[in-house]
Image (cartoon, rainbow, N blue to C red; front, side, top):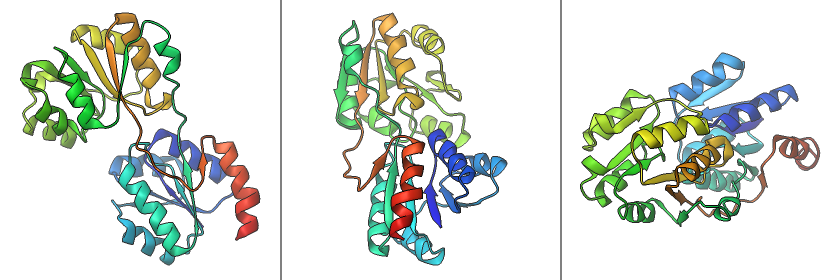
Length: 261
């Protein structure tokens, strides 16, 4: 039995590929929305729970999991580290399925001014040097920017998913509703360009989430508007085994992994 730790569009596509290959799997997600997306399309068991290392270990033992496929977001650092530890302790294989990185050097050779930040704190500190800041990093770490950006009520604007709890949390932290754009992606370069221009952004803050995370369309829109981009780099994690394409992972499962089991 394979456990797919899901939560991104890439993970849903991977689940479809594995099902088409006849693999037996269980998916885990952390949101009702993620569970709904999978259950609407696939007839597999989906566990909705925010699991720590012990939860994952117990699930592996209970369901007789023999392979963990971690297909979470590149910035879901905690669940990834927990999954690696749980797999090691349970004596089973762990694989990381991660979307490809966008090569930022291709833009740095143009008129783009890309500022690399090692984490959210550094990104917020750099962003504070600009007058109008447009945040596209999601709602999870918005408090860091609110705490580090002076006069944030008049300078910080952000785009967020259309979940009421996310929006309420941001408003409770003090960001005015007029500064919040609630909309569901993915977004085209043209849409990003119009939004950045409408809010007169001087800098865009984003994450190195990969092309499927919309990074290219954000950078290209910012380049056209000649505004700066702060890119938060991915967490540095030592993965035991990594795949960037479903075909490579499936080949491993069909050949090497099954030969070892």
